[in-house]
Amino acid sequence: VQLGPVLVFGLLGGTIADRLDRRKLLIYSELILVFATLLLALNSLASAPNVIVIFILVFIMQSANAYHRPAMEAMSQKMVDVSDYAAIGALGSLRYSFGAIAGPALGGFILSQHGIAVAYFFDLLTFLIAMVSVYLISESYRAENLGAAKSLQSDIREGLSFAKNNQTLMGTYIVDIVAMTFAFPLALFPALAPQWGDEKILGWLYSGMAIGSLIVTLFSGRASKVLARGKMVAMAAGVWGVAIVGFGYSHSFKWALFFLICAGGADMISGLYRGIIWNETIPNKMRGRLAGIEMISYMSGPLLGNFRAGSLAAWKGLEFSIVSGGFICVAAVFICSAMLPGFWKYRP
Image 1 (cartoon, helix red, strand yellow):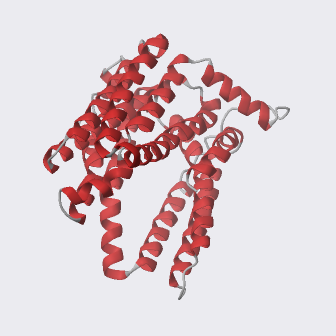
Image 2 (tube, rainbow, N blue to C red):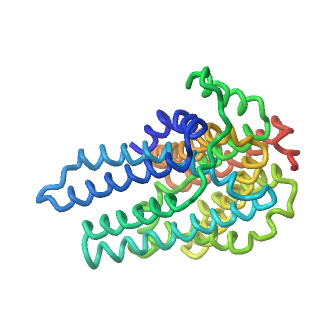
């Protein structure tokens, strides 16, 4: 339900973001999210909430995100100077890390104290605040005119061709996909937690990577000083794989949490430099389309990774599933870097 809309609408949403007023597209997307969240809240108040309705609304919300994210990425690129790309990447990382830690905690508190309907209405309020914030942006940040004669299909093909012929971009996509597909252990946390304790341990496992991401973000101010951007993406992805191997071999909770924190920090470093590379190498008139491809790459990996981890764990066991994935990740990152020298050697 989450991946389907991204695969279907990701490239289309990015192309629309390159054709229309990005600010208005963001407002329309936020409006859809507001109404969908309202319907989720109303459904939760029913005596027998409809599960099918939940799935439909999640599909609609994820479809809106397929238009929202490319428009936001493309607009952000125009809102700051090139010298500030690393800074906005760090701020984006801080927003993500803080949300990943505070969001579940706040959601759990509201659920336990006030119930699910209040949690949905609180979420509705946040979408309204976001929509008003976008509305208050004075400029439109419209992309360069692509030409009325061009079709959506030709624009999509142009975006795919640009990515395919750019080794640096392909490296960022492939490294992210292989790292997440082969070394993403999130689906195994509920099975791992009982050997170390109760539900509190599970909560710490889910928070471990976000803690590592937040720590790295707090010290990311000098990211712009490192010019070997491609190497940083690849090496951080390799460290992610090594940390997952360490996590798989951990037989105590403290070591498991330590390696998860290391993995989260490495993933944030990789993501930070991927974002800088994207803004430095993609012309703004194509930023929406390429943001659609980016969204497909970073959303596909974790979902495929959860499927791989769970399937392999059921066949060969938890430790084998985690450790083998980490080793494969390291090997795949090495092969990718060797086959795409333009990515490995990239410097602005």
